[in-house]
Amino acid sequence: METISIILILLFAVVVSGLINRVLPFNLPLPLVQIGLGALMATVLTVGVELDPEIFFLLFLPPLLFLDGWRIPKEGVFRDISTILELALGLVIFTVIGIGFFIFWLIPDMPLPVAFALAAVLAPTDPIAVSAIAARVPIPKRLMHILEGEALLNDASGLVCLRLAIAAALTGAFSLVGAVTTFAWLAIGGLGIGFAVSWCAGRGKHWISKRFGSDPGSFILISLLIPFAAYLLAEHFHCSGILAAVAAGFTMSFVENPASSPAIGRIRRDVVWDMVQFVANGAIFILLGEQLPKILAGAMDTARQIGHPEPWWLPLDVVIITAVLISARFLWVWISLRFTMFRARKRGETPQRPHLRLVAATSLAGVKGAITLAGILTLPLALTDGTAFPTRDLAIFLAAGVIVLSLIIASIGLPLVLKNLSVPAETSESEEDIARVAAAEAAIKAIEEAQHTLAVGRADADIYAQAGLRVMARYRHRIDAVIVTLDNPESSRHLRQVERELLKVGLVAERREIVRLGDEGRVGSEAVKKLIREADLSEARMMS
Image (cartoon, rainbow, N blue to C red; front, side, top):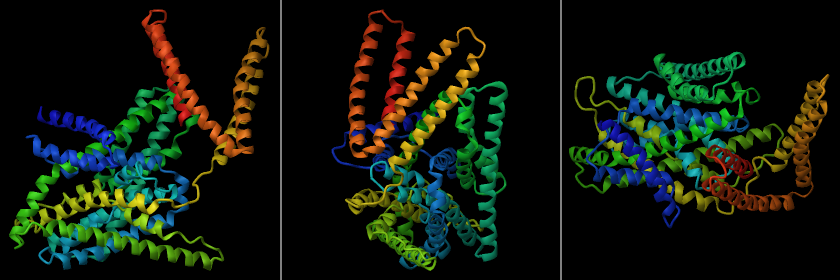
């Protein structure tokens, strides 16, 4: 019963955090509101949450990483794959080594392997936190795609470094060959298993739909189970479950065929996944806030044991480590860009020099989140000889502090850095309009062929002709509207905005009239539901 109560309290807290975020008079990212609410819950409620890292990883990360891998623009990932790999692999190793030695210098009482373990969990950025920041901060699309791609891939490299650092702390030994071999197996095995699970599920769904029909509810449930299947299977073979979930989501974009599946199933599935994302994101940050008082108490005890009874140096260390992390990220990004420009010149190209504020934005956007929290909590409680793991609570506090501070700095700094910064558009509206025209022309051609085929030898062939004309008229109207847009884009953009505003007014009036007719008994309840749904779909299509 206590577990059920905790789950219900978490769900209610997610709802309350959204309400608080909307009524606040100033702009504050939702994750910070949720962390604060979680800390308040820990001080007010007597019910505490014992956070098991393995359960935390399994419950929250697979579906969220799967969804990020599914929805991330694939052309952006392939276009900037070299930049993403430089950040996801090179920057992680640079951070683990550089920040690890720095933490050891800053806190000499922390053993070097523990310092490396802390640096390893601070190296990866978090896709959940990055997406949460992007919801309120206008990050350029291409930069956002790079950050998302980096965050999806650097988890494995950071967690592998963490595993090696823990092994070194427990055994006192380190093998470079073993580290490379371990990393290769985790990465290649995780990616391969994620691809295989998603491909098999997609092909199986297509085979069943083709022979026995489509059941939207069952297929939605299958999509929810895929990330967990990929994660658990990869972990069973000692591969990276996180990379398996990412690979499974990335593969879904290629194995799914929208033309062969009903639209209603995709609409319902997207709604379900949006709800899962909202609840899981909120629960992660609320749990982080709920853990903060216990983490702080443990860090204070550790500080007293190592001869630092003054509490002020703990937050000071958090500030220093965060500042050095951002500086190291800035240095790596700047050097990486210079190297990329050098290679472009060697190929005879004339690269466009990015604004220094974009480099600063990339540095500030390296926020930490759920991966860092769950990773640091995997530090063992004791060494192999039974003695307590040295400075464990202190490392957990520093990691949690960096998470909170990185979110605050990104929330404040990114709007200032990106203000009035002109960047090229990621996808022009003309490309979308050209695609709309091509799709409409293909639809008209298919309708003409189907109309003639269905009407052959029938006495009511004129009915098919009339129906075909009515359907094709909708597509021709769409083509005419797009042609006007291409001829005068500025005027058409303003026209579309006015159309949306007027349509919204009309749909509100439409719903009110439908409800009034239903209240008066002139229209049945089933008809009211159907008509309201039609109005909702019209608004969703126009506002998208």
